[in-house]
Length: 401
Ligand SMILES: Cc1cc2nc3c(=O)[nH]c(=O)nc-3n(C[C@H](O)[C@H](O)[C@H](O)COP(=O)(O)OP(=O)(O)OC[C@H]3O[C@@H](n4cnc5c(N)ncnc54)[C@H](O)[C@@H]3O)c2cc1C
Image 1 (spheres, rainbow, N blue to C red):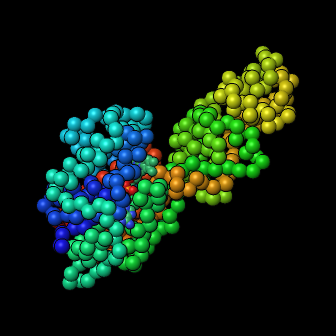
Image 2 (cartoon, protein in one colour):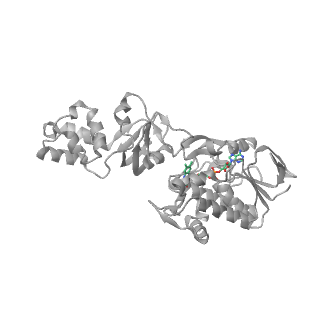
Image 3 (cartoon, rainbow, N blue to C red):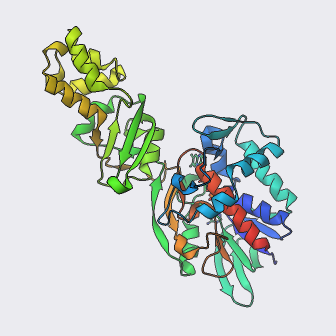
């Protein structure tokens, strides 16, 4: 069996790239070891697939991505934009809506997006082998790649690896892409779970553990001055720690041992409000505080400090100032993350120094890497799918050239 291109991994990037390459006249085989197709798309965006983000700044798309080489993703993202993908979605008659900060979701279900990708593959006459395991890959300068699979061997001059990252192993994620990279002498940026809930433990966390289920808008930051990352989003208390969009976003930047600094009342002058309340009120500090932050949080906060369990008019100003400062700069050190089982993506991956940003081809001739397997990780909000489409697109263009 001989093809022009074999694409390994029928997820977002692989399906899109295979369809685009097929539509350009290439004979394409798409191979995946999972039983069900595109499971990650199916579960994405709460079942509605947040398929892109229309707020992506085309002048500086790299701002919403993390990589050891931040500018690597620029070329692909500016050559295939959210507008391009939206046009495709509209051409397939899929209804969608914007939810929050430019995030576009299907009105119906993520199955519509899978159907779109499959229809593109059908239009490109792409062959599918699924489920199909890969046992070995060899390369010769005369014959290109030979891929040994559970359905026999196949030859192709070009091989695209689109096997994604390590998150959610229960639906088919594997480190296969990294192994292929290493087999051909490419470097790997160490991987870590990203867009992941953070865990907390020990005595200090006890007062907050009972807040599970509470959600509130916060400003959250981590990192030293020059590399500081900051997000204004909702935070969610869970049984094991913190989650919600604010924490998922910051988790991609967090380094073990470093603190997070959380403003629990962004945009509110807590110090001024408390000092003013002191002039007119005899209520407990906790009661006044609950006018500024959710009552359950105010309660837990006050409970953890005996000096705060008194009427506000009896509190010294400096105690109120210190309380306001702690609410504006709540410093917490996570004990860890929920790991790949709960992470939406894997940060790190195939080192972009060994890839062309124009084509996604690696230093190894005819070997390409696209999507999440590459050391490019998007923010929450449709950016990871946009990277899958954009990297798949420039790769397909290069394959057909
Ligand atoms: C719960 C959840 C929700 C998400 N929601 C969103 C969202 O709304 N918006 C967004 O932009 N991003 C979202 N993401 C991230 C997004 O799903 C991924 O970034 C994206 O799917 C990556 O595309 P990919 O094609 O690189 O990898 P994947 O989509 O993961 O596809 C990889 C494919 O490779 C196959 N594969 C793996 N190993 C092998 C092997 N050894 N042999 C053969 N095949 C193999 C897998 O079976 C899989 O089909 C979400 C992720 C999760 C986990």
